[in-house]
Image 1 (tube, helix red, strand yellow):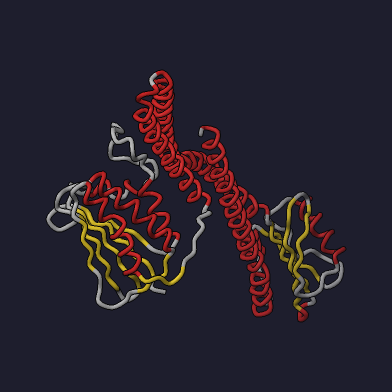
Image 2: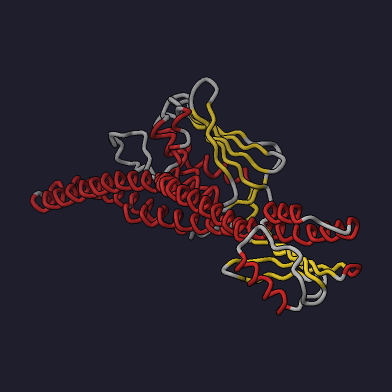
Length: 410
């Protein structure tokens, strides 16, 4: 169980970490792309405003250009159409960097309106080129992207810190989810261990009785018939336990052998009534039956239906045996057919109604009842569900329990 828990924790943690990491990476890439597009989109717009201002005013002061450079983290070059005097010495970067930029610009032979990105002096620049034909002037706007890239790197580091913190939280969440996921398995394992402990004890007991009575029969042949009867009774107990274990195995593997077809529901219930009427008479439990006037049919496996009724009626005999008797009732609904088994015993408390259908569950914690192993109702529910039906427990008016079976009409 510990190894399984570790595997579940690793599965939850790594699968979630990969998914969240992918989402973070996509978000970071999207943020980087959007931010860079936003910054790069400003350069042509700034250049357009500058050139338009120069056309209208016929001049731009060095102070205004220096202010633009510092504000926009850019280097601006205003050059004549042919090699000649550099009108503006710049204020943003060093002379060496500006010279390297100028050299690159002269070699690039850019076209008007062209927009390129280049690495110069160890920095990434976005360069945009515009012309003012009226004055034979070329204007280059070189946006330094280093600051924007640094801001984005800081944001990525913050993302990474949040992601690392999230991984720590995710680990504890994975432990919690793994514990929750294994809780039903742990509970089922505990019930199985409890059951197998009791079953092994109960199997050892009849084996010991059989061995003892066999020895006694050999030593006392005159009373061998009495010893033989005890041996037969203990063999029947072991046979019942093995049969129930085989049914449980079939239910777990979903290998029920079903022959579902349209059957007369009243005929099925009458067979059960005739089978159990003498049995109920022996324990002084009157058995009655109520049938509708019209023939009712439902989709069911007749053999498995009788098996279900055997389990439920044996359960009634064992736990709800009173002289008030048991009623069998058949009712037809719009979409299904309803079978009711009503007793007037002590009833089943509300908090135990779901538990009684669990495998290996027995209300008799002391296991004084050696004829039942806590499997019957679980088997009955699985057989009902395998036939696309359902089983519910209701209170009997005046006290007791009613098991209600619903099977489809078609």
